[in-house]
Image 1: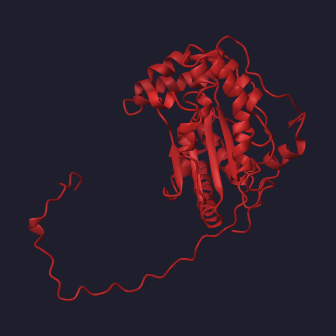
Image 2 (image 1 turned 90 degrees about the vertical axis):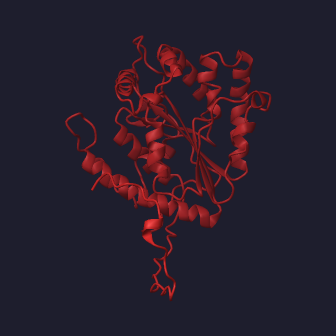
Image 3 (image 1 turned 120 degrees about the horizontal axis):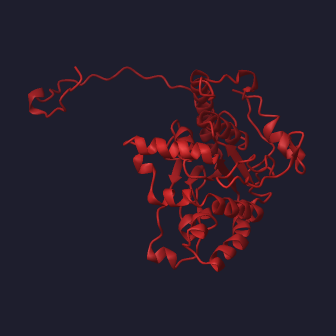
Length: 331
């Protein structure tokens, strides 16, 4: 496939363009705050907005003519799987280019519980070489980590040249769950909001490309997904007591998110909101957007030819009855 470029260059992501989430009615009947758009464009940063949303790379076809829904209003599965396969091939091309050029990429996934972050991360990493693409999902900090500089335990996972690091939740825990659930003091939360923009500007100046996604889901859809997890033993582990507690604090989390965006939606590392009520569309939109933010070229190596297998000579393999085999339960 031909050259694939966006307006941004290494270390300088394009300025904020797609704004915040569209209206999301809370359980209290209130709407999450969002930037005002006029005729489909934001009141500022119009050029960047158009570059991201209305002028995708020529290597990615416009899906607008194929918006086929299934019986539940979701994107048709066959179309979704076909497009996902095509985009995953592009992700592999992107990784070859990143490795060859020494590009460093950090992608942050934040958002509501059950908004589909994990599923999107899985589809992004599925086709790529895990040696050059790492997913970081840190647990509760230890006592030692609590005594460190707040960003320290995240920095040690940052990419070297030619690597991609995806954070499944990140340092933004402090502005969200830690603040709302009382796991940090008001002073610590305020310090984070002041320090984070400077921290991220420092990363961008050092040559790292930082892309931040917020997955937005309505409270009604989140409730459906919570109940679905309760009914499915294989997915019940996804619903923790913390999730249930946060479910009762929807408005508090909305306020925390709004304040976080107000401080950290900076030109060097803007937030991009993914509308995630339809998981299939959310995954495709996010992957497509990610590809548009990396100025990669197709550097896929040519296929090699396998030479004829060499003869084993006079080597005799041991008797097969001396080995232990896993029973075939599906004859």
